[in-house]
Length: 219
Image (cartoon, rainbow, N blue to C red; front, side, top):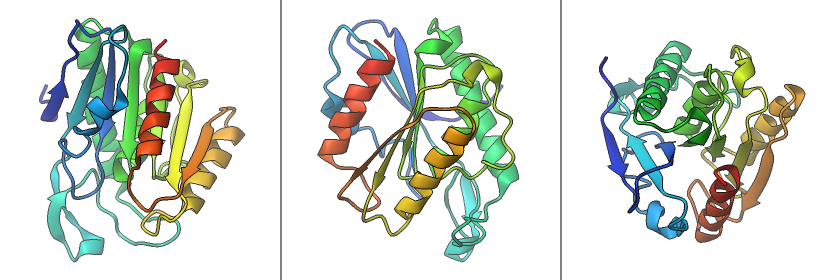
């Protein structure tokens, strides 16, 4: 089985939990690498961070330019028309990484899926359809692209989900974050939701909130 290439950051002590964190369109696995020390996780919570690199794909909305992408975006409409086949393939690749963490000795319920923008859309699909219970799903400045087609696995029907969004985001407007909350609530989830006065990015206040949430779900 061929796994996605990844940047990996090991804790000082043997890992007892893992976070698989997906970057956004045009970025790579190094994008969120600098965030790890800023999280200031306690030594008593040794977490392995796995940052996979998306494949190189032509992206329609960018004139067919080839770049790191989890899937093609066909239209920048409010509904975000995407290549769902490619998104599902990326989700399966992420699930293969979950399987590797389990093989490395991390219990599935100690694994968090995190994703920013495009990576978050893949994260929704990968985490909620996974057949073993996970620790949580962190959705950053993103949207639920497969909300109408996803088959939520009973193992993750009560998965803790935290959604963060920028109130000034003009790439993925906050409407998408709010809509994800509504969809999840209709499916029986109790997602957390918080906004920050930022654009399509991350801020220190958000990083502090991410740290607190990770410590909560991995306690």
